[in-house]
Image 1 (tube, chains in turn brown, purple, red, cyan):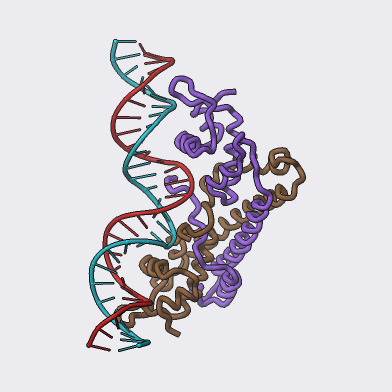
Image 2 (cartoon, each protein chain N blue to C red):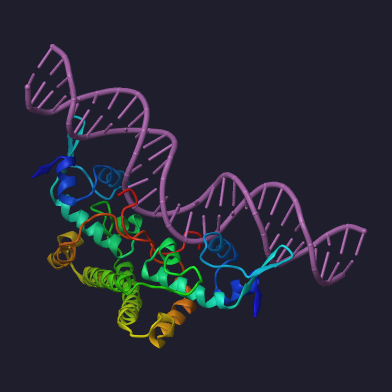
Length: 144
Length: 144
DNA sequence: CTACAAGTTCAAGTCAACTTTAGGTCAATG
DNA sequence: CATTGACCTAAAGTTGACTTGAACTTGTAG
């Protein structure tokens, strides 16, 4: 079923500008034009979910395009996928530890978080694991 | 014990430029100057760890600054910690789904991952009930 | 047929968190 | 005493992912 950009926007929740941007970047494709206007196949919706998932996982759009290119992709490098999966394993471990620490701190009866030993341990770990470098910028749409 | 910016940089692992930037933003303070040069108290190191932790948890610098009282003692709302923990839960779920998807895709004989039913199911499962809006900008330092 | 809402392109703007650059200051070392 | 190197400030640049604006075209409702 063909969708115009407004319909795709509604279905995917992404603004039309983002869809144009994604197309320009080669992440999605329109199946043609009706006049000057783009027409998308509705399987693009699924593809957009995949992209959203990848973004959520912390991959850049370039990474995602490289992983899931629709066609023209020779054969997706399985070693690369495995490496990404291992990377994710590590990230999951880190985030899990962090989540547990935060959750503890939220429930901890210590009057100040700094007085909670669990929290202090967490802080120390965060301070020393500078290998992680820059982390996760804030959520939320800037313009909205 | 007083530290100059080089010593603080070494102790914290952050480049001097970042420390100046943090000071300018009001996240840390120097205790004074020796000539033209900043002098920091070494408790700033712990504060930087706290900042690093906040960053890893996904708080913005502005958020983090708001988590300290004017006197500099941390004042972190437990509700926000809990909310952040919940956010991390969701992210961990997504990462896990994606990791499983990638790992499967690496072994899957289907010509394209998008054609693999297992992969599609994983994507679909992760994609449900989450707005596809903008998510996390990429990991990894741009200049490094 | 005309108006206009909704599409189009291309360029430029935005945001966060820094880094880099340019130009200057100063303490110490040879 | 001249030079070096660490530090300073202010301003501009970077990166990724989009958004916004200006100027233009078009499908379609009236």
